[in-house]
Amino acid sequence: MEAAKISPKFQVVIPKKLREALKLSPGQRVQMVIYGDRIEMIPLRKLSEMKGFLKGIDTVVEREPDRV
Image (cartoon, rainbow, N blue to C red; front, side, top):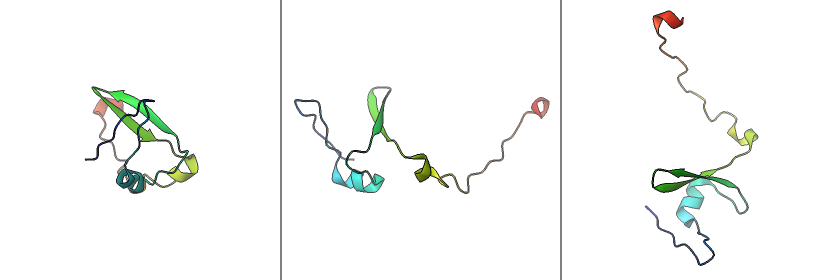
């Protein structure tokens, strides 16, 4: 777990270890979401970068008999 400090201008520096693990770059946008009592930052990615990220996911869904 990494910690960061909020500056007087309410800015936060993302620790290097996290930036590298998520391949974040300067100027990249993130979506910020309140989740319970915390803030989650979700990196926004270009659609072209998302190609194939669900490769191998199981698409079989159990359905109720009356929904077939």
